[in-house]
Figure (cartoon, rainbow, N blue to C red):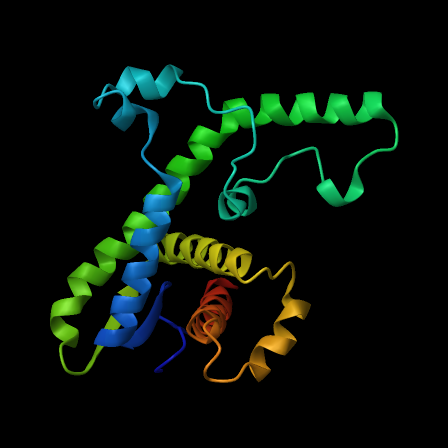
Length: 202
């Protein structure tokens, strides 16, 4: 079981993690939370009505990682329409879609990252000096899967990976390359993600 998820009888998933692995995943999840930022209610001092009626941003994020996590719905920088009017129409549609959906998307990603942190905090005390067995319900498994995907998207953006075919050169990086720890985390999270997906398949 070490290093990959296995299905639990009756649903859910389990994996053995040591204290170093727990620390790495937790640290990455905390960094993701910081990157996503607080919700509208937190910005407004905890007023729930502020979150209910707040509109999201209409422009794509400046940070490339956030652009990867919250892409435009109707535009693709690599496939810009030749017709300027069509391009402008797509940008307008993307802005409107982002304004009404990004806050909810951010909230969902925050909640998934928090679910990872909370389950790891419960597990950490039993993993000191060894391994602890993490057991996830089906609902928690889906939250973990979404969070692992977001973590890989974030790391992949920093490594300038646009698709999985770009990973081949990463396997050949020398140990002294400063990107090596990030690459190892990216590949390791990919293994966790892949095996977690398999536990959710009927």
